[in-house]
Image (cartoon, rainbow over all chains, first blue to last red):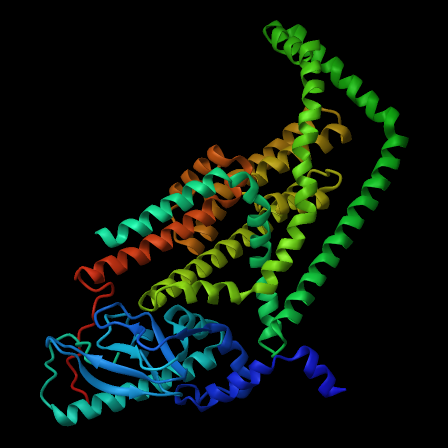
Length: 174
Length: 352
């Protein structure tokens, strides 16, 4: 009876997506039954090899989560030739800073093979914070922890780089 | 500049085409609106892992059952009222005769009104109404068409759901996906806020009409309140519909000018409360548009497309506003202007 019901009424994609997103570190704090709400905030998009997911200098508006495929992260930063920073694969995410400040991207991301990505737009995370605070807070807490780790890492390398009168420079990853 | 010429020309052609065929777009717009309003219910089921198509079909069937039940209720109530009216007919005709006598007395007192009354009651005027009847019937035909077409299209839109959005995003060049997504999400939020604001406003207006008409002892005050709430979904129409429906019932119930004046006073009060209190409090907060701009867009929509213009003027204005905001942000970032959001200053307390 139960299997008959699930075959007809339940979405097989739902479980597959949930199993994948449960493995993404950003969503570690989210309980199993909350993933349905998260799916409503995500938009999926397929990219072909060579397609640009985001460009250095463009205003960042979304977080990208790679479900399949690999992407290359490069940065020009004043030089004529872009420098490769990282190669990201399934389960990785980038552009998390856009969920906080909507500032220009600091790197360009290009698909190196067919990619399927989920996009989480900033307004959607704001909506989650209002409508499902536990989930929104879990995601934001993870982001805060991630930023703290990055900041400590930068400070250990450049301990005197932050002056009290400066503004925060957008030097974090795309 | 040249790279923007082709998209701009295509956009202009698309807008021209839509304007040319706008009279056939009505069922599509209505169906899309209905699907948009029902979509949150579909999402509630999807969140629990139900297949999208099953959820959409379930919500559609539930909605149609409610519509049919409401239709059956209205027809049954109308039947009862018709039979009651047939028994009350002598009394109602007597009331109208009294009104005619009052009208005659008014004309005797104010002879200047005589030509206007004669024109209104002339044979030409009566013939004019009779001549227009076939064309009015022809105009009613689309209503029949809409009645059958809109539910079918609504189901189609509901079943497609997010697929349409995903397909639209798939067509956008990869680099602009984020911008397109921001436009879609912001429009969705803006429209959602507007619809929620409109529903709250309609609820308040219906409640005010119900309380006001009950206080003066008007018959059918609950039914009129429901009617006022329903018609308030069309901006500026709520108070007018309250005056018309309430005035008609008052005329039949009391047959005196005083009764109609009471109803008109309540309707005017509702209109003033709507304009001065409800609209600024509810809609301005929901859509962040100045009330004067909202009224201008309503008047422009009403003058261009009539009642449908009134219904869709503000949502369309919200969409255009979001579109312009996102494009302006993109323009600023593309041409090296300052970033859209100011950067916070670092605290004087060192990081420890």
